[in-house]
Amino acid sequence: MPQPRRKPKAFTGRGQASRPLVFTTKWNNMVEFVDHRGKPFRRFYQLETLASAVDKLVRERDRLIQPAIEKVLGPGAANSLIFTLSAEDEFRLIFTIKVTTATKRKTQLSLVVAKNPEEGSRRVAQEYKHLRLLHERLKEEMTEPLRAGILFLPDRYRREEHHRELEAYVTALPVGYEPLGIHRNLQYTAGTTPPHTFSKKETEGLKQKMCTLALKAFNPVTRNGLDTGQLDASTFQVNRTGKSLPKLKLFNCVHMQTRLTSTRVISFLLTDTWTCRGIECAVAPESPSMFFEAVVNAVGPETARQWLKQYCHQAKAGKVKGSSPDYTEALAELAG
Image (tube, rainbow, N blue to C red; front, top):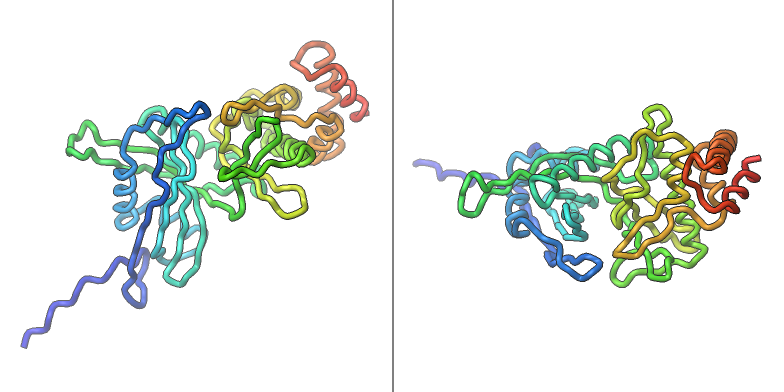
């Protein structure tokens, strides 16, 4: 008597599971995001098209998301992925991915996708390259870049000339971190719904930490580092840790500055501003002593004094853009 044909096994990811695995994906918060003027960001494809392409990817020859999950959790199949659109700007979409495996292990990742194959893809690819470079210098102070690749979006009418290939990358997403923003009173905020406003003292402490991270990101040999003149609302995220000063991490870097010297880095930190939702705020703390401590925390006391003496000398001579004369004089006294 002929044997009945066996049903095909359910998707099990990489490797074989002991029993069939039900693989599910879900997409949340697929809403419009607006700029600081309330105008919706332009989109070049339907979010449903992107979701369908990603769902197809993770069920087939996935070289982007599943390998990133395995890098964090080790070998094993993810059986549940929940994508939530968390941020958007002119060039990219940012999703949070909540991952659950067959053995109930969990992690959280971030997926960044270009909004178009031209400028958007160029920026996203550049950003991932910068993250890889900076992670070697700031392993503890920034999120880990895990994987980059291409997402293929077919045209709904199957016109080959309208198919799109979008750059995308995945990073780790530490739990408890929220987007850093600026309140209209120039105090920093955390989160979006509704944002928590930090005190003046906490804001100055976060500015100090931001300067320390920027100085650690600077490499005197290759002469490149974080471009503090082009920070945006997704560059840093903050973790409110009870009564202690909030923790700060670098989450992305679209722009890097080249041909840097220690003097130019200090000059930029003391004169640059960053803008969030139309509100502009100085990068450096108001207190010279706090800025001095930021430099010491980044490079140590001896190098800090040397760098600040060089900066103050050139600032007083008008060779680099400086802060106020009083601020420069205070730094010179602290540097000895």
